[in-house]
Every structure is written in structure tokens, then in C-alpha cells.
Length: 189
Image (cartoon, rainbow, N blue to C red; front, side, top):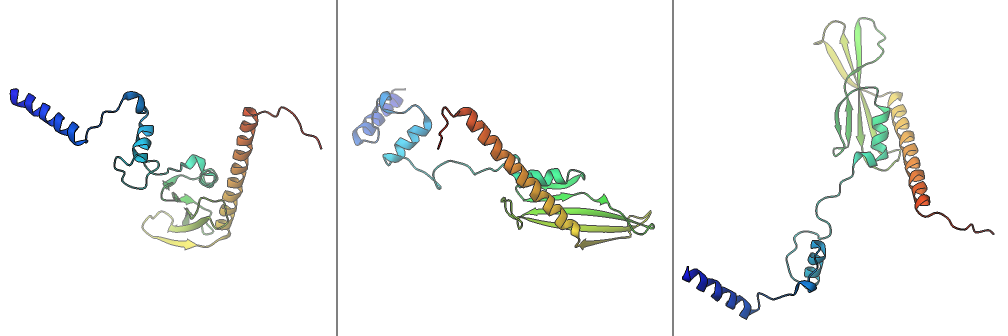
């Protein structure tokens, strides 16, 4: 016990004498952690790894992306097999299409890839696959990627819906701003 006490006293004297430990009154230190970190960085103390600023990544949520929301709403008539916002893809399950031949069953699958979050004509890539099976068999099927006018119709419907959602978001935020800061006087020309 005596050796431990002697060691603690010696260590505290050494640290105090060489300037590693610096007494700092509470009133000079910020209470908030972020303020303390900022003060330490300004004074050149401490270590910072990475870029600085906020920690963690930037997260964009699907509910704030009008293009994503529009795609989900337009394709809500069919179940999805894969919906990955971070991967930028929506894949529907196979669903029945109209077959021209009565002895076969035709099914379609739609894939939507997001190339950007901006509402532009080149923001989406739509692919449609067609699966044609002989009636009453599941093993005898042909799957092909098809090009049809349906791709452009789906793309146009998504872009229109996304533009509508973005316009409504702007109108809603403008309305909320007007409620917070009402106009007190009207300027006349």
C-alpha cells in the first residue's frame, strides 16, 4: 500500500513538473462536447482522424427522394422482389401479361435502375423481361429482354409523378415558411 501511494505521488509530481498536466478551471472549459472538441482543435491539441466536420456518412432517405417515391407509387400494382435504395434498383416479381397464344403463359418483370437522384430524362433505365412458358409446365420457358413502348411509358409516368411530388414539396415548404414569417405589410408600386 505504501509503495502504491508513493508511486501515485511521484507520478503526479512528475506530470505536474514537466507540463503534461495543466490545471484548467471549469469556467474556462465548455460543457458541450462539440464545443470542447472545437476549442481543442483551435488550440492545436488532440488528434483527429479523417476529414473532420461531422462524423459518419451522409444518408439520403428514400422518403425525401421524389424520383424514388414516384417509382414505387407507379409500380405499386405488382409485388417487388428487390427494392434497394442504396443500390439504386427496383425489381418487380414476375406478373402475368396478355398472351396472344392460348397454349402459353406470358409473364413480365420490370427493372428500374436509378442513374441519378435528379429528375431528368436520363435519370432512369427501365428494362422489361418477358417469360413465356408452355401452359401447364414450369420447366419449358423462354426468358428474353424485350424492347417495347412500355419502357418509355413507365419512364414518362415516373418522371411526371416525380415532378409533381417535387412541386408539391416546394409549395408545402413555401406555405410553411409563410406561416412562420407572415407578411406584415404589402408593398405597392
